[in-house]
Image (cartoon, rainbow, N blue to C red):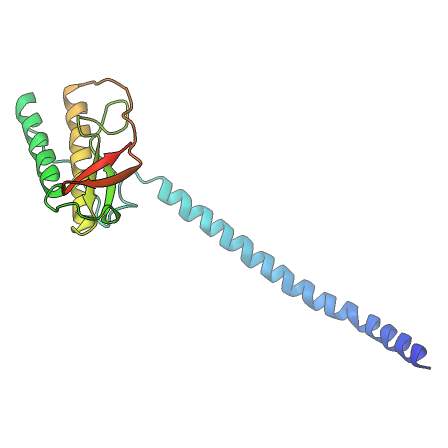
Length: 177
């Protein structure tokens, strides 16, 4: 008796099941339509962002630009060097007492890519105004790029080693390679 009732209830359930499937099918179509719309929207937004010609707008809240270079080669180089010296001064203004508080950033620009100069990477304390400091580093990179492009300068395309960490030695930040 139990088996017969059980079989009958299963049969009854099977009769109602197709109706539920049709309802789910309609809902599934709406879901797929919504999902497709969101995917297309995402692709369009991604494409619009990739068309931007500013290479630092996704990192900084305001697009940054190089300093104005209007002099001769020596004057322009001096302006860019002054900016670099200011960056080094800020980076070295805090004594290194705990390496955990220090980070590394690339510094400068080479015509063939990558950082440049005798100081290709720079350690800086996270206790300074980090956003302002990194914006200054980016302005320096853009300025060095503008200097190279304006005067047709070139450099060795050798890539400097990338530091792995920072150590504190005699209150100075030392890059570890």
